[in-house]
Image (cartoon, rainbow, N blue to C red; front, side):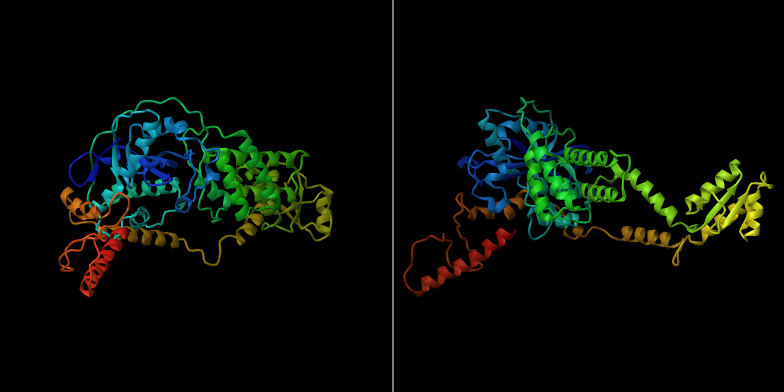
Length: 526
């Protein structure tokens, strides 16, 4: 199904001009020819420069009992109601269309997809493929080439949301993007160019994206839940009954103003059953908050208690923008109550435009406007056109300061500037910090460059290091131990050789087994 190509230091096509479809599977076993099936699939489409174009992820009903859930965490209950491969085959082809398919074990993925499409009687044309495991071994001299180790080496971060197909696909996509964009020597694509694939009839199934690796984080449980869902450029409609259950549980969880881990896990299960994606999950969250706001505004007044409830819910739902106007109004009210002119009661005498402007400024900074001259009035402002107003004489007699509009403006602005700044404000500090950051970025190079091979392995060298030595493993996993002559004078034998009599035979075979086991462990880890 896949025609392997390579990322090489030799001349070829600039990979940044290509589209890659990074593919990850979870399966019920290792051998599709013995009945193993796909139970989860994820694809991340991206440009060679690392820009993600689209994502796709769903659990897949394999049509048989899952007995290896300890490896991937997918149970029979999880895939209940999930689409079959036949129902998503059209989507898979659409997401592989016109792209180089990338997988960390391309041959493994090839056997499963070939088997699944073969069951449907679908014969696809050859598709260009890139095995990232082969690429890593060819370009990097590093002990251990598992996906999470390679991803950590190149990106500096351990993959999140593992084990899941989408978590693995995202980790691999980020790794390939960094490898292409930051390698010490330019890498080029040598292999067939992507071609359009035939379209298959729509299966009509809703996705069932799995959410794993939930954590509260700094943004809350729901932010992680939403981030673990796939981003689809054109998301399908979720299941209405699933959305109804999700909203009901969301309301129950937010009744006390916060979501805890167990509630988040239950919401994740319902998100899968509803077929939510990042886009549709955000839509559900925003509609949920908008409905709550409408109930709060139904009587014409949003009380302080109602605003606090909305704020807590908005923080959990990552939808604070929907109540930002309410928060701004409340913040403005608090700012006025706590402004630099807090405690000032002023009395304007006159109604000129200049008077209106200076009074508005005072109110914005916490002052209150008095309608009557009382002993609590601190300042009377006259605009000059009302010099005969009796309140002016009364204010002077009571010892209240009387000023004109311009004097009032200068007084208010002076009070406002007294509280600005801080004890440690330094205008040069940010510039120094930025300069140091730029110097560090220029001086540092990615640590993984230390493991860049002086030259990439040739096909013969690759085979000698990573293929031929695997001949010690047969198809059913029975280990055949080969002991090099430099380690032991004992001839090469299978571990199941005939028994020998005598201590010498025991010692010889024992030495072979010890040496062989050491080699096995080294190969497995690598």
